[in-house]
Image (cartoon, rainbow, N blue to C red):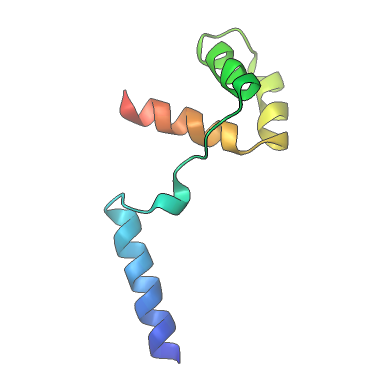
Length: 71
């Protein structure tokens, strides 16, 4: 049983290091969340307010990170 978990953990780490793990990919946002994201990226939402939004919906920060990684 422990070998199964070790192999599973190694496989998960390998998949993550190759960037192939889909479980970490951000989920689609609603229209309102997408608007918030665009406003934040345009500098229209201060960091203090953004952190409140991210606290309520952590998915927002995943989208920011994904966008910044692409650029």
